[in-house]
Length: 261
Image (cartoon, rainbow, N blue to C red; front, side, top):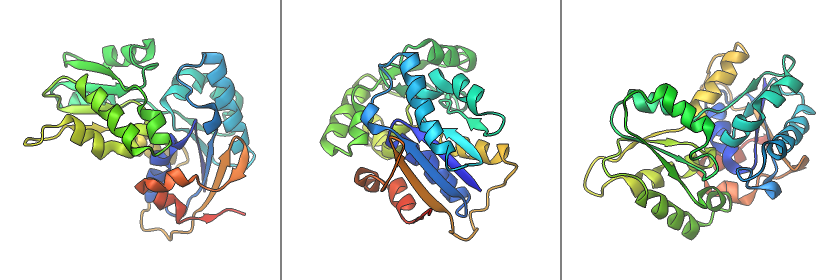
């Protein structure tokens, strides 16, 4: 079994690691284009073009499924990706976990890129699943870029700015950008009180990995032999896993895989 993932950059690490944990025997293809980051401020046509380029590069390696491990690409490019690749290649998009966060009760903050915050797509999700909950949209200026470059000081600055926009007493934080899952515990520490309970985090990595396996008729088998290989594509060209990826636990997990010939 081979599963491909696409994103602008390192945001795909969390979903890839979730797939690796669920199926250590699955081969993974990671296709990104960090030179084109960020995708958020681009037009829908431009985002779609970049996502299609990453998807086509991954498709050459004949995966059994493709995960769009990027909220921005899922919002803007998912219809085009499915029109071109399905039914031969199942395409699984990423949706911010607003529904389960609201279901747990209490005030909710949705941390997302400035381009996604206030977007029609996100507002529709909140309207559909928000019920009567207090949901606050929080634009996280510079956080995805700081995570991409593994720039610790820049991450701290972006976290502090977003935390200042987050109302006190928030019970749950939805991670509306896949990059944010790589610094999840730092987000909890930034939002939660030093002497009280910290908010629950709701990312999408586990859910999207599970959906990919369901689409393939496969089941999780975390005890399978860790035989899955790894192919990394940057801008369509084979490459090593970026050094910045190895600063995160998810990247180190994937780095242990053998390159697929």
